[in-house]
Image (cartoon, rainbow, N blue to C red; front, side, top):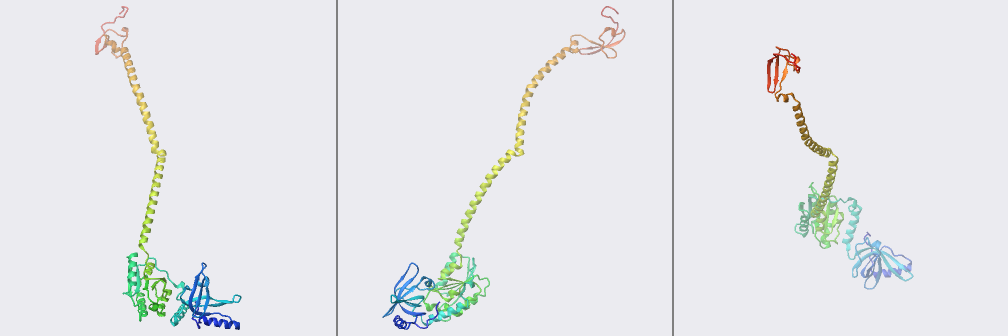
Length: 408
């Protein structure tokens, strides 16, 4: 930023001075020129070309894109500007133009120059350095608000934060934000909030207004109080085009109080929607995994059933049942046959049995020793004997013995 101008020339004065110094072989550097803008154009590359004029003369000016990036104002027709630059003289064409590197509104006066001097001093002290700025907490639970109780800023901050996250607690620090005593009032509010240990972040807010209404926010004492405040601080002062020293020293600058509330408090509604979306994705994935595991389990069970002992036992049981049925069929065929054979054998045995002979009136003679006497010669007269008949035995005595050929 260029320092305060020591001398300001009118366009006609510059023209006369150029003519005089050209004759003397002098150069024109570090010039401050004031005039009204006419014929302002902006190229696609970002260069601005315009003309400064007064009642009698005009001066062609150029603001190249490299310098325009550091200039807040854009030359527009009809605006009165104070521009800084070096004079380029084109001897061949007999023309000259001002190559600008700074543009300020004309008529700023001593107040503007004092503000610029204070800004340079505070910048040199490092109060505006980016490396000292602290990030805002991601999920603040207690937010301090410094503003006027009667202004729209307090209402806007309350409305926005209630909509974004109703759980956030607001700690209101009433302060005067305009006029005499405003600086002291805001510093006292800062000092009071600094005593609260569980405070997460602070919003310094004020609605828009004229430049003189925003004067307290350019006060050095307030700027230094903000710099030493122990918690992150977001400024929401004025309208979007208003930038104060309080905005520059704050950890974060918002163009309006409403935007400050939005930057400080995240929208939980969006978090809930994101959480619901994530929940649906997780549920869907879990269902897919469960279905896949179920299919794999069924396939594994089928393989186990084919190879496991229960399946083998079932096969052997089936074979046993088949063998049992075959045995039953064989037994069913063999029993009648064996029964028939037994009956036939019994009949044959009965036919050959001596008892059958006895049933026809015959008797078996047993000696006294119980042995069967098949020959008469084995008997002796007077010997006791027993006759075995069909239905029992009878004791007898041999009276006489006769041999079959008639001999005794």
